[in-house]
Length: 350
Image (cartoon, rainbow, N blue to C red; front, side, top):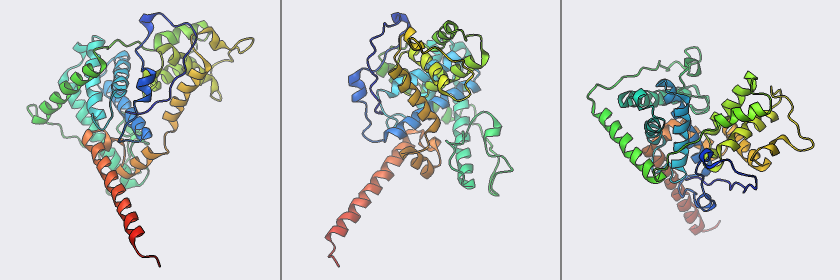
């Protein structure tokens, strides 16, 4: 589990209980540090898992509310555990399966379609990461590998002489791999229900976003609505849904847009009182959410970046075996460094 910054307590009046989500308590936040993984690597893995859910739901042509609900369930689950115990791809697939039940969209989702799309995405991510390695241009994670649009994968013009087109070989109808996937979905669904205590109620930030934009008089500005809507969707790839209420995310998207150069948002009043004082949010809360969003856009430094360069991308670490293999390799390297240090200390000087 990753460690999170502790949100400040707000003195503003809270919205009605039906519009609130369960959040981490202060003690849960302070005790949620992973003992095996660096925080920035955990955050990048969870962002990869949330984007995996988005791509999976897009391939399956599922409603956006199902996508958002699945991402929030995903973030809640990993607030109680760590990616080295449950692979992010397996949990992402189970969250979509469970989210379809929560949003009453089960009729639109077939287990076989879910498994086939997941297997296709995993293979495509691995292929794109290998192509990125061959070209020597960073890694698949930074280049949006495995996305649905073909323009975002290596083209024949930029590929190396050893590059090959992606070819997916589907499994047979009665393949044992299909039944292994099915068992994985059921297994992780049970763990999600257990760790969340069957508390699956999810409130999304989009409804309050439209209300706030209408109050501010910009609800009919298409550019403003689309930008803020996109920011709210991107926030679901961060821990913000388990740290802040949905109305805070909505207002933070408006605040973030107001900070961007060339923003389509007209100037909002700050005198005699800032515009956000009209709503149930503080400036510190909005700045914290915006810092998470900015980190998502700029996350190319730190331990996670070095791990991606070494392993070729997040897809290699998305399964439990992959992340445990990295931990073992790291620990073996640390042990070797300690042995070298000890032998050097014991060797005679000069």
